[in-house]
Image (cartoon, rainbow, N blue to C red):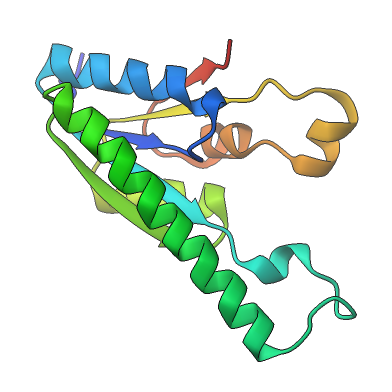
Length: 149
């Protein structure tokens, strides 16, 4: 079996992603691997209709707010990871979550992706989709999904 040198953990900063982060940190320690923690900022326009889109100023404020929130959350998360003595780096990306996660895994030459799953079923899965499911089906390296408790 190939050695695990680089692990990519994708997070949305939710409580559901905590078990996946813990597993990624555990694996990073066990394999003395580098851990990349990735968060993807999904563009605001993906959730707005033409009528709701109130112009460039609103869009700019929403995007800046999302970026600041992500930076703040990542800073807190990285402090916790550092406290646990795990070698880790962070990466904030923008775009389609599953696409950016898979691209980041390729560019960082990740040997494993660790991602949480919310365990959605029924209509919420149909409408919200499953980022984890899309990552599993498109990634070129193994993907470990960790279900939220």
